[in-house]
Image 1 (tube, helix red, strand yellow):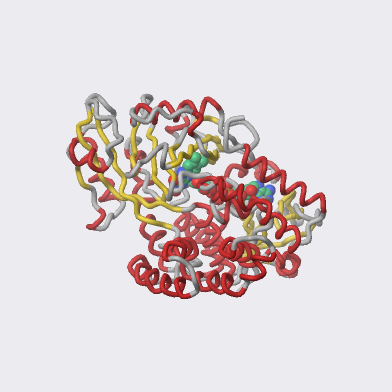
Image 2: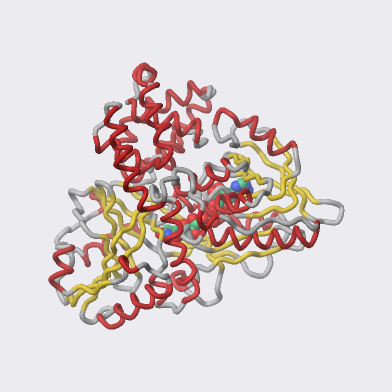
Length: 551
Ligand SMILES: Cc1cc2nc3c(=O)[nH]c(=O)nc-3n(C[C@H](O)[C@H](O)[C@H](O)COP(=O)(O)OP(=O)(O)OC[C@H]3O[C@@H](n4cnc5c(N)ncnc54)[C@H](O)[C@@H]3O)c2cc1C
């Protein structure tokens, strides 16, 4: 088992720098995490460095769906639907705690983009391409059935709906669970470690990187046989440092999501609907909230901080009020939001929504491998493909043989529950354990959904750290999550905890406001932050809270 705690940063650097790695991955989003897992399980020595927090880029800012991309059928992007569609179930079975089936309704209207015929055919093709299992194949609903499932739908000219399954996920937790598994197999990964330059050998081939620790400013050199640039929206920046930004480049597009309380937007059924301009929008119920997204606009601003603008907000509010006309939602009802950047591969003359989501690998003359494009859902297959390429290269160059990818049937961290069927039984058993230590059934069940087979550690922390939690003025359940985030998931700042370890900034702002002070105080004390660090991290969280609304 490797190290994956914020208290072991020095040891992790020691491991990363003391030997030449087989692969060094730059970027701790889902792409990098997936590659780390695939390569480590084939027996390679793997390192991963992330300049911000894990998943702080696009991988915590998606629509949070493991989906086949039904809308790509409209663009006749059949291949991507076939590949990504099939991956949905693999992602689900390997981590049923972070991925949950969600029946999706696709209403159609007289004169709308879709009719009963096109919807039926489209969903049938989708079922076929994505290899959808029998119990989850599409159904067609008449007007009455559609309205019964979602009474808030616009009834005017409604003709019926398609009904099919996608999967809901927590993108940041999925990324972290994948990386935790890689670390379990021996990968060394660290956040707040920025690659500022490359090191080349005498023949001009890339041999290593210079890393600047973003917490203490120290510099490190890490050497590897192969270096993979998995930096999502930053892929071109790294190619520029390498002097290899030629040919295809990235086209960044921004997508935003709005979050509403269940009281203001009591959606009971996930809906996939088209806006006036023909763009498709998701409205998804989640816990006690409903969220809606997304937009798709060319982006040229600060890559690390895309935010919601008034224009984005108005666009989505108009879509919502058109599809759910009794709601009359305004900006006052927006509880939270997030914005993310799609790292798409530019295509001449195409509008943002028309650019393919396919992934591609660019190899520079120096040997830098850059992976761009793709989807959260397809991460495992993307990783398999690029590691296959590395395996072929290493075999040619050094005659070393590595095995085939093993990730198709490999549970991610927290996923050791015998797949989706086993997870039901596992949940029932563990709820019993939770109740035994004094939790309510609901509390236990929510924690099991979040932590899967790692739940025993959480239960243990709740029991063992109860008095320490109370001494630190933190609720024992929150304290267990916090200690787990620090010790087992490398959280270093309050924003890491409230955004990417718990998702609370998006779906439970009250939780953030309630626990902000106590969590920050405990982190400052245990991680021995300086005064300046404490101020910086406090301000960072406050800024993140502010950015959930149009400023
Ligand atoms: C609005 C929106 C909605 C989406 N919805 C879905 C969806 O529902 N389902 C789906 O399957 N896909 C979806 N996607 C696509 C999916 O989110 C992305 O394809 C995926 O998250 C990209 O992951 P990544 O790891 O390549 O990039 P990122 O997650 O951005 O990771 C790259 C990482 O590299 C780091 N980095 C950059 N430069 C350096 C450096 N110099 N040194 C060290 N680290 C560095 C960054 O900090 C970043 O964390 C959506 C995307 C968007 C924008």
